[in-house]
Amino acid sequence: MIRFLLLPPLAGAVLALLGRSPGQSALGTALGAVGLLAGALMAAPHLPAAAWGDLFRLDELGLYFLFIVAGVHLVCTVYAHGYFRREAEGGHIERHRVRQYFGWMNLFVLSMVAVVCSHHLALQWVAVEATTLFSAPLIYLHGDRKGMEAAWKYLLICSVGIAFAFLADWPSRRRRSSPHPSSTFTGTGRGWRPRGSTSSSVPSGSRSRSSGSSSCPAPPERFP
Image (cartoon, rainbow, N blue to C red; front, side):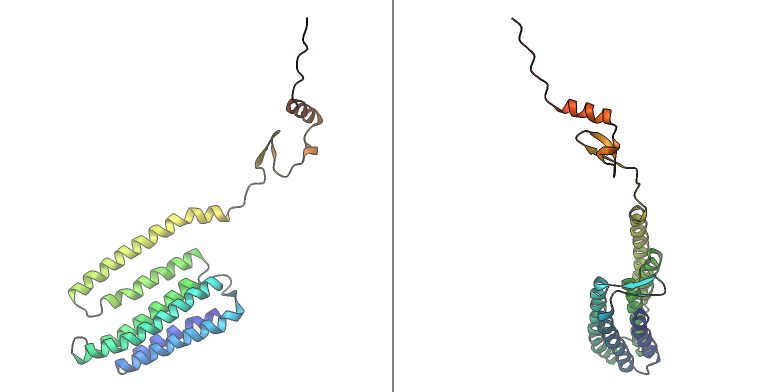
């Protein structure tokens, strides 16, 4: 089922790049967003779902974020269509750049779906880095010097930040995945003993001494 969730944004990117006008590119992107929403609704009764072994997994929390991604994608597509139509009519942007915008936008959503569904740390890191790479051309959309400067600063800051975040999370993941030792000790009122052992495993002499030490001593006799 997860395989079908990756198809709508990929198909939207192809339709956006093949569109002859910005309106056709926006229409293809909107169809991809609607397809992603429909795929999320169809996947809801079959959770949890996995694909390609255990590399991709979708549960209830992942489905919640998937609905957010698909909903924001659809809203941004509708808004971008009206915005870029006015920009193209005013001569502020070329029409082929609008088609490129919708194409990169669909690839960005594709990487976001991969982030939501990834179940492996290395795969998740690759998907998060892909979101940075696919969104950088959206910053450099107009092709001017300011856009180029903003794009490479964005790439540098996001790539370094994501790398440090995953490196900081790596030791905690290893500690959670390591088995707990079986020879741990627990403290009781009568001393330390291995976890899982009962009082019958303690020698009788130790039990008698411990029981004797726990009782209150008799008061000393008074002599005349």
